[in-house]
Amino acid sequence: MNGEREVLHDGVSPADGPEEAAATPAPTAPSDEGAEEPTVTRTDLPQAPADESGPQRPSDENDPGSPAGGGGPQRPSDENDAPEVPQNAAAARAVVTRLLEAWSHGRSGEGPAEVVLADALLVTSELVTNAVRHGGGLTGFTAEITEEGLLLTVADASPEAPVVTERDPATAPIGGYGWPLVRRLTEWVSVRHHLGGKNVVALIALV
Amino acid sequence: MVREPLDNSTPPAPTVVAAEGEINGCWVVRARGAIDSDSVDPLFIALWQAVGGYDVVVLEASAVTFADSSFLSLLIETHHRTQLRIAAPGTAVTRLLRTAGVDTVIRTYPTLDAALDEPPSSRPA
Image (tube, rainbow over all chains, first blue to last red; front, side, top):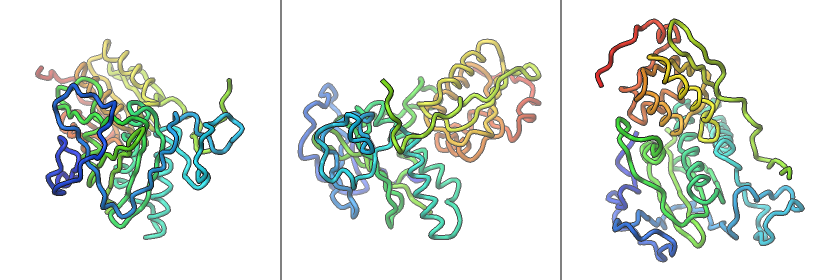
């Protein structure tokens, strides 16, 4: 558990000092709230993945394996090099499981610690589910091991920021627990907007 | 129209409710597998049906390999309506409850027998 370096908390980032504001406000973001949009743009990530969003497309139509299957006609030319987008949260969890098992076996010869794996899968599931259900569809997913930990990048097709409302578990109506779990289990989470969607990037410590 | 499965898609998983029935006056639901927003519905139905007729509902969770916030919110909703007991939770469920801070609210038991043995309590509202 860590509660000290959560970047995305009520729209401010006390731990990381002044952050560069998002250069281009999302045109379709709701403006009925006076609250500052909880957007944090990080430019210091050593392995920030390229903006691979390309043409916007729903998650159920990106099947690079069958070009004759009626996929989008405007695929970027480097599509073959890009990882496939998981179909759902379970597929994304399988990607993370394989990555952590390979990393752990290469490191210690043993599998990843149960709690580390459980936390990583929970964050993965929440972020991907949010992209699928509330973000207009999952448009990209990458998981990589960095010196800092497990870096997840989840791209969706909605420029709107994630719902960050935290509810009291004792009184809450159904739903709304995902984001607090993500915040508690990650070193930091950032949201980077781009044309046609956003990337949610999260770092999970691997200790 | 039949869509070909993606290479990275996962095969359809069996329902997350393995069994349910009455034991010692309690309604017991045995859950299994990975429970997320895509798979939670059968468990939602099972618990929702149980809360109307039983004072104590036991969720046997030893075979649950993964659970996310959809499972968590279902547990909290069930807890508000009946005496929910979680029996034999594994790492994933234990960790989820602890991370969410509800491990002090929702009772867990090391075994199904332990969950069944405790008499129904009269909880303060």
